[in-house]
Length: 138
Image (cartoon, rainbow, N blue to C red):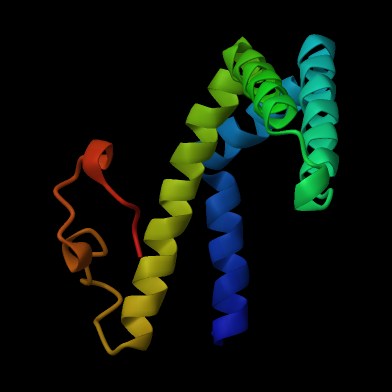
């Protein structure tokens, strides 16, 4: 089996993983949640207004207006993240990202000469197993 065929098999294995299936289900729930879509739309509108204000020449910018717009945007983001579907999506997306980071580390370590069957992506970066204090894999 060549590397491209192995990558395709890896893609199938990832799609069979429960973390991927949870991600797909959470994404579908987000897409179907009309309330969430409205919250995202409100957030996006506030972000665009803030960006437009910040793109003005510095001497035309109103610092207080920017501060208030930024707070409004942050509040809208908070509303998005309080949505139960979005909160679940964030959790399952993080789990999928961790899986993909681990896969990428194994590939990278293998390309650096490590044994793909035994290399430990966690040990490579002093991983203690807890993601609470982690700056990220890789």
